[in-house]
Length: 411
Image 1 (cartoon, rainbow, N blue to C red):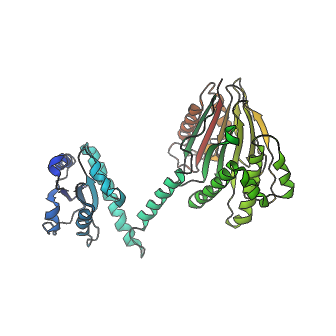
Image 2: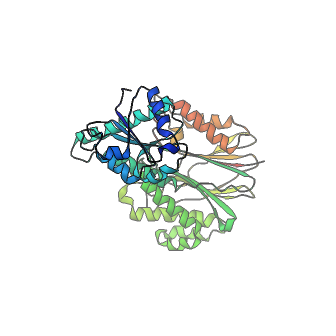
């Protein structure tokens, strides 16, 4: 990193934490000699002739003082970047957290300070480059990045912070989006007054913002209608007469499972067919006590049922993807998990992960990997699979979202 012109401004309470002295020493260790000042000196014009690359401002300054200092050099072709710093007490930073400013916190080692200064300097140059590219505002790239980060935070809120785990079971999930936002999702929740537990993994076609918005819609629609039995009646207009006969199914969990998927398909094809989005999903309802599991596989990758005694079984599709055809028919299938059996759900980001030579990770490799983990817990299966997929892809970019969910019935 070339030597930068730095202006370091201590706050009125600088003597209380000694942060300026410590930071100055670290800056000297990485080859920089900052100009030291105070807020009043800067605002009075003492350094107007200086053209700093970065402003290092003590966090005890008020938000208004920080803004005034930053505005003094906005006339430059490349205005300086701004970093806040503080001592061991980080409380002064609280007043600045909503202003999209970078910050430095102790310990101030030369290597860490050098890295942080370089990142802020590159961000500053990006703003200048964006300004020179065209008539759009210079901050548009950064604003887009900020919006995507906010979108990711909102989307993370759609994923359950903790999955339900019935007595005698293990449940674990893994989620690695390929971009800031994802079209994959997983969910788990109680049904039938706690007598049943539902789990699902889904994958919206495509990636990015559009898929993420569609994911939010589908996830909300499925969970709401599955957890609210009266919603089946409200959504009944979206069921075909031939499908409504299934609503009389006596099996606990079958009614909300089947009616929810049929109604979601009807709603999406009636209102969103023009967007050309659809979603594959595996949606199951479990009876924790008996291990019985009812499921609909709507065009999704076949989950792998691993028997504790050895061997495996693939749970094939029982209907097409949701949102493709208004008259699509979905059927329920069932399987029982015995002691030590595991059901492994995943999206195609796992099996279609490619290495630098374009080789797929593939379903056979996934089956061999999981079969080679006898007695492994649900979390170990998810973590081990993710590690193997990442080892396979190496430095190749992640091409699709990766989502996994493991359900294991303990011995």
